[in-house]
Length: 205
Image (tube, rainbow, N blue to C red):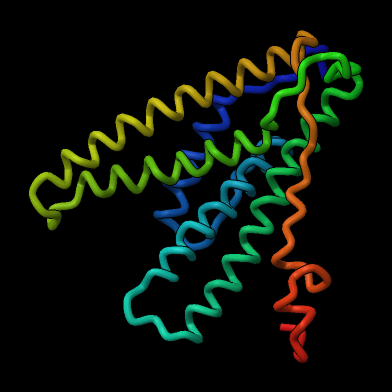
């Protein structure tokens, strides 16, 4: 590896878009052949993809209480995987930086890690895809396409800003001007030792 590790937020966003389109065409969530780092990015995006569509099921009119409970448990499991993979992105980046003695401990701390920014890019990719779907609907009421076209413009601007910010952060880290840390999410809802609804239940569920 050279002394300036390759990192491109635009490449990440493009990968997320390609996966989003493919996963809507095909069954399953095949992870594309790519470098290990980008495979982790794609796996994190797959968790968000699954979470998005599982949350849609929770909003199905007429769903029974049992169905809603099952979906809620699925959402919790997927959300845990989503957070774990965002942390894995940060871990891999820190592993790349360590031989370069980066990030510098004396550099100002960035409040948001690259993994969390990649997670936000993932969600924006899904929003863009589904907003474009809404624009293309032929059964929608008057004004629906126009309203969603405005939303799409805002989402594109938000993603462009985030891509620029993520690339800038990486360059600042390489220059020793900024640092980031791995922040564990430490979710409590899936831990039977921390969630009173779980440890206080006779069945533990």
